[in-house]
Amino acid sequence: MKFKNFSQFARRYSRYIWSIGLSILGFLISSFSYFKENHFFGYPYVGESFVGAFLFLIFFFFGSAMVKAIGTWFTNVMRRLVMGALYEFWRDQSKKLIEAIKRESPRNVQEPLKMHIPASPIVLDTSSIIDGRIIGVIKSGFLDGMIVVPQNVVDELQYMADKSNNMKRQKGRRGLDLLKEIKDAAGRKKFVVVNIKSKPEDVDKSLINYCKKNHARIATVDFNLNKAAQVNGVVVLNINNLANEVKTNILPGEILTVTPIQEGKEPRQTLAYLEDGTMIVVKDSAEYIGKEKKVVVEKILQTSAGRMIFATIMQSS
Image 1: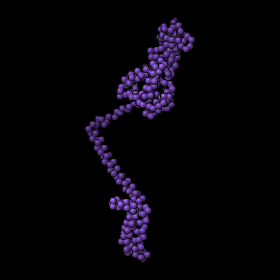
Image 2: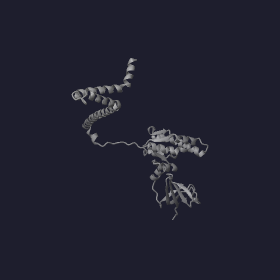
Image 3: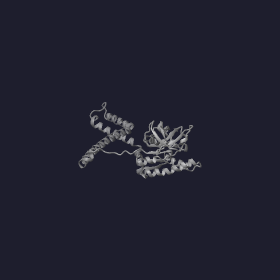
Image 4: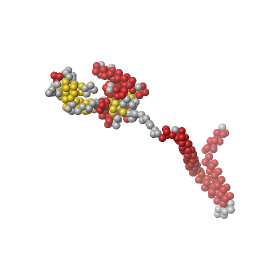
């Protein structure tokens, strides 16, 4: 208890103690060094008292600031000295290590370093999964990034699969089946389902925000999502554009053999399809539905939603 009281006393009155001690020290030093033989105004101990009082006032009012400043200066000086010594030490050690590596394996040092830069993740939306063509692209090895499927996309497919509407129910079930194929095609290490919190009406917005935050690309065949992602600076992998780029180049004037299968929107107009799914609109061909005919390509309309070919029946010579 006595020791505790003494500690409290020392902390409370330390400024007085140090000020008095410094003033006494100044009194003694000034007395022996100068004022012992040169009395101030001819009176002994006046000069010494003045020096002691001056030192007392200086340390009493500015002592803590002076101590902190001196401590900070000393700390910075020591830090620079220590850091400089450490820097020189590690620089010497690094040089020795590099020289040792060069001696042991000069070929590896001289050859350029080959780095593998991982591809950015690829986020799939509902439309790209239901479309299904992404599976072939993954199997072909053209997509080497991590395949990311948001949980709200899976929930949307499940919701569609449970709908009473037959068409939506079939799309939802097809999407869930294709999702399993996508997982198998990508492999366990390159397929992940992530949880992105969003409202049902904000699914597209949440996908775009996730891609921006994680520097990911988005695969979609949805026209509106495609445009919104591009506006927000997200790289879009449009399966339709990819399919159009790898299709056989067909030019106006070429002759194709097709089979009209149904009527078109205009009178006597029919629709036929190539093996790759490209739709051909054939004029004045209603009587040829179900019959194989040769057609002449008139023009080609290329859009982000796909490619359409307009043709007419080839007249026999």
